[in-house]
Image (cartoon, rainbow, N blue to C red; front, side, top):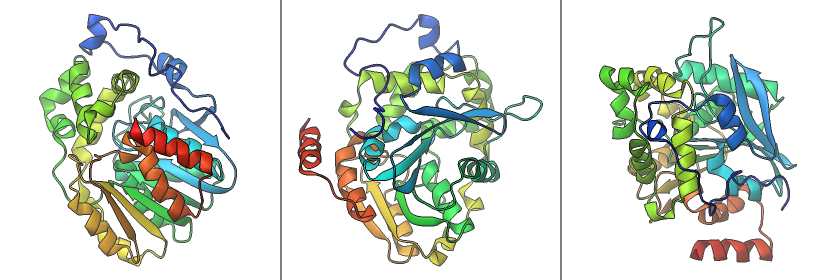
Length: 330
């Protein structure tokens, strides 16, 4: 396979080491160094931005694609999709703060930054400047979708193509697992106690069919959520999530090829929002996956790859098609 092998360092079929009762209850945090050791990939790189060592992977050659994940996720959610698209493109994906290996941004005094939209704007602009990215296609899921289309609106001509996968951006009620952090009691207690069972329940909730999730994937989500400083950062971030602050009508002014992908079983962002995006972005194409949930590119990457390849103008080899068909049947 071209590029790097971005499978988790721990095989999904290998037995996972047991976690202590303290860890399972979320009483302890997972150190950043431990997360870096466990979840860095073969091509992982780091760049210092706004007080954090930002974890990213840069693989392949060709036209540049930037992939942005959603709330409480990580660059690993793109593993299969990134590996395949890197055969014909340069693919850059990163752990958005305060998630994944990256963790929270910090001020000069060491205080954890609040990740509101203005902060994400400064962050993504700085990250792309640091890598020398002047023009690229963007693929964003959920929160990452919001950051992607907002970037396209702010930087005319810098976005070649835009793919929104179950994207945020319209007024909505926060999913219950996120909205919990609007409670002062939850914000205060979650830093010291948050059972992994709650995180696992949230992860299962973003899949259309939770039977697709393997143990290693669940463990990764749990350990990232319990990463040092992450719960504190989420507690500061969630009360600032007000989608009334963004203007989705600005999408009407975009002059960029766009594709809207959505899981019909999305329980986090209403599937009706797919039509809202498609109606505002001129000439946008839209695809709905009947049986998939909020993160279709992780749940069924072979399905999403078909539409991404068609949109990006790339084609699969016969071997790739056979492999995708085999994975689809698993």
